[in-house]
Structure formats: structure tokens, C-alpha cells
Length: 144
Image (cartoon, rainbow, N blue to C red):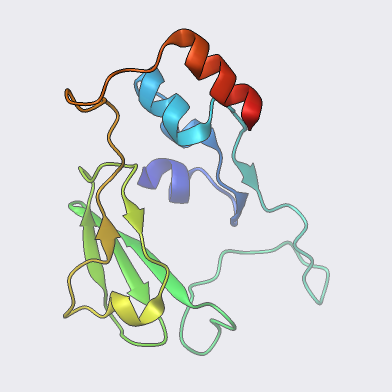
């Protein structure tokens, strides 16, 4: 992950794509992307004030501008830092289910609080709930 996100990019990312999911089992990949695929795109429209080529810059408090979140890649996981509240954050283990839903409410991301996440949706139906027929699935899709 750090190779792709940090080492393989010249300056910065404009958009992260589904190439981050290469090697993911097809059913999970489809569930995460809705079956769509798009490449990551590097930021390529950076213009410096003096016309020189852009260079990577270490983000500090003095130059962070309007950034509100920081993400630090660690061997054990990704640290999520609310830049308005703390100088360190909660560590999300790399083994966390990628379908986990995380809150974007900044006040919930204090390092001394539990990680604000909800369990991922079930991917297999409960044994007590009858499965919908293929015809019902088509009808439900057409209603949307």
C-alpha cells in the first residue's frame, strides 16, 4: 500500500482508483465498487508561482492550509488524525474489513475514544430470512 500511495507517485494523487483493490476477491471488489473500475490519477495540474517543477512538500502545521484530516501509514495499520483535535490519532488495523463504515464526525476521532465505526453489512443472508427469487431481484432492480 505504501509503495503505491507514496513511492509510486511523483507529487500527489488527484483521485485514488480501484487499482488499489487489485488482487481482491471478485465478489468483495464488486461490492465495494458497484462493479465499476477506474484508475488512480496523479495530480498533474500543479503550477508553481515561479514556473519551476513542483516538488513534494512535507506537510506541517504551518503549510497545511485547510486540511482537516491526516493519514499516516504504519506497519500495523493506518493512523487517522483529526487535525483540529490532536497531533496523533486512532490506528485502524490493516485487517479491518474494507466495508466497515467510519464516521466523518471529527469530534468522534479523539485518540482516547473508541474508533467510530459500524460493522460492515452482511454479505450472506440470515438463515431465518428466505432468499428472494431471481424474478423478485429483477423486479426490485427495475423499481430503482
